[in-house]
Length: 161
Image 1 (spheres, rainbow, N blue to C red):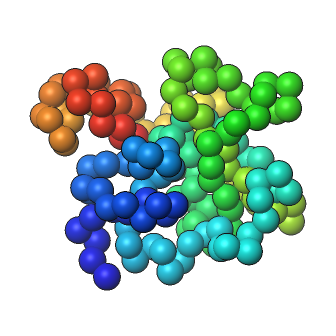
Image 2 (image 1 turned 180 degrees about the vertical axis):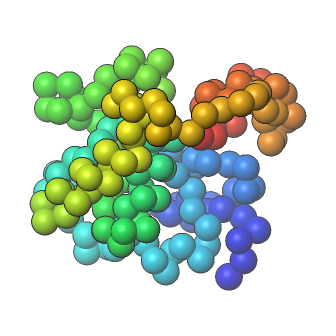
């Protein structure tokens, strides 16, 4: 297959390479070749039967999912609809952005937590290990200026991480 487009793993709609999230399903897009290596096969348990590793905005979720894929740990990523009382995270903690959960089987939880610690070392106060941004960039879709820590273009609404 070709990696000239990205696709939604849920509805299979095609998007440009700059797109990050399906406009309808609100899930991270993947390359067509990645359908063969889907980390959460059809018979993978639903999130209610799994352990949540992290809940956060799409950029965080993509970073953790990528690291889990590299470690060949099957996982499920989907919007977190749980209430705060049930362990969910309020979108207000992320300036109102949609939040996604990353779930794994109990047998993979310890390894997944260790991977999470490495991926998010900068969030846990180890700033020296975090990659540093040096300058502002432009949106790949509309060429409007964006700050390096923006998760969405304020002009065209394109989500990126």
